[in-house]
Amino acid sequence: MIANYRYLQASLFSFCIHAAIFMYIYGTFDANTSKTLLISKPLQVELKFELPSKDLKKQIPILPNINTTPSKQVSEDIVYSKAEDEIKTPQNNALMESTIANLLSEESEIEINNEQQEISMYAQKIISTIENAWMKPRNIPEGLVANLRLKIRSSGRITSAELIKSSGNIRFDNSALQAVRRVETFYFFDSIPKMLYDKEFKVIAISFNPS
Amino acid sequence: MKKNLLLVTLLLFPIFIYGELFLEITKGSEDPYKVAMIPFEGNTGIAKQLNNIMRNDLIRTGEFSILDEELLLPVKIINDELVYNDWKLLGIDYLVTGTIVRANNSLDINYEIFDIHKKRKVRSSKVFGIPNQIRQLAHYTSDGIYESITGIKGIAATRLLYVNETKDSKLISTYKLMIADSDGANEKVLLSSSEPIISPSWSPDGKRAAYVSFENGIAQVFIQEIATRKRKLVLKKDTQISSPSWSPDGKYLSLTLYQDGNAEIYILRLRDQTLTRMTNQFAIDTESSWSPKGNKILFTSGRSGSPQIYELDLRKLNPKAKRISFEGTYNAKASYLPNEDGIIFVHRSSDGLFHIALKYKKENFIRILTEAKMDESPSVAPNGNMVIYGIKEENLSMLAGFSLSGAKFKLPASDGEVREPAWSNFLR
Image 1 (cartoon, rainbow over the protein chains, first blue to last red):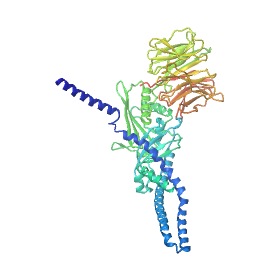
Image 2: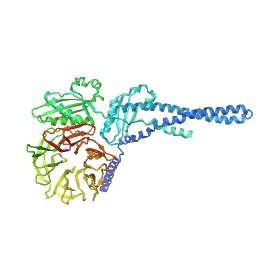
Image 3: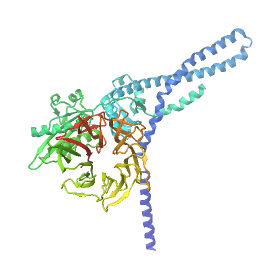
Image 4: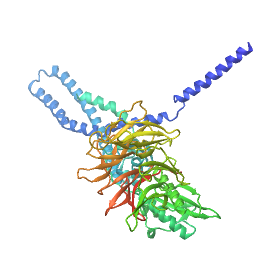
């Protein structure tokens, strides 16, 4: 009986150890998993610079039309059909309401777009600063991409540059890190509004992709 | 439509807020690391010698430019901290300082590397040596500097094998198998013969060399120990055997045998002399070389009507040769880059000149890396960043090298002609 109990104890013990080993192998304890997830994140963010320009082109011509057409309609109604006023106003109101709602939402959209525009302007400045400092190594295979994450102080000083995705070619990775070293400080950062800096430019991801 | 657009923007917006800004860089040009090397403290004579050798080692890589000695600033240290700003104004990326420590029977170097941008020490190291090995000491130190700055292992402390041919007053040739440091210095004779010696090849541990010698009238392959000069015939046959190449584990030699009427690739197991035939073709198959992992062999074959490069996968039971070069009518003498992502070979371009070329596995075009007329027999350095090869200048064969990052250099021949260089593995 005692022997059986010991067997039971031992098998439980061994089960626990094996479970722990398997959990370790499958990465349950791996603290780095969250880090690797971040790699895919920047890909979504890339959309940011394509959207604002497209949106702006589409919306700026639409806006005046909305402003003029409903007001004309309203004034025409008032002049030619006073008797029908009572019946028509609710409709007009409905029309007005909907356009105001549209206008409001579009205005907020424009605000967003303005912010987007500002972001993309500063982003462009960052890109051109780094591009000027970047020396692409010779005779490396095509199609290499390396991603860095930069932490930047509000003064524009780069406090850390971390390789988040290696290109697989050390010389290429080095050239990217070296470019950031050469830049050291983005001198235009003091012109970025504090809100925008806190939201967007504290930590940025940069992709070096010459193709 | 408008509403849809709004929806899309609003849906995407949260991603904007939580994601980080992502930028893409698309341009760039070559530029080396700028390094200031303060002459090491200690014996000035030795310091000067060390400095010269290290400077050349680093410049040869193509990835460094060393500040001229006249432009060096005095090193200011305040509260144990180097004053970085003066160096930054000079555009320096890294600063190297060091001291030479001389004891009874040893000569050691302590060196330190400072990152001027990050304003901190990135390396503090000690190299142990003996007084009559100053060159080796310098090579070890420059490899340490190279590695701590680039993250790539340095090759200054590796060695070269090559063949030297000299003619006496009656125009009778003497052939010598030579061994030298990677910068061509410290040259020593391994074997001297009145008959040609060709195709030297390093064993992966750097302790032995295999080569072809015609001393007995036909081409035979020998293995020679470098330390003791002891040598032995690899395989006794009455037909020619040529182009030995060592497998990365050192247990096999791939060879070209002529016993079947034409040249075929064989693999020889050194332990028990078992021969395995790898090719069976009416055309010539030769110049085999192993992949760094030892699972593939590259060779040159004439089976398509012109010399082209083929690859054999040794993991398969009956491997079929796969053609991997398609540009032009002459591609030969190929070897892999150390990470197997490409090959270096001799290519005859459309103007009829022979150049060293590089082809990456994922690219469908070749890159021509040299511009002389008769470039031949390239050998890749173990870190994959440099290639040494043979050139002809005024009808004299000599050695030249280049780094993938663009540096070019020549190795001076002390006497006569030199050809067929072979770069060793890392020796430490």
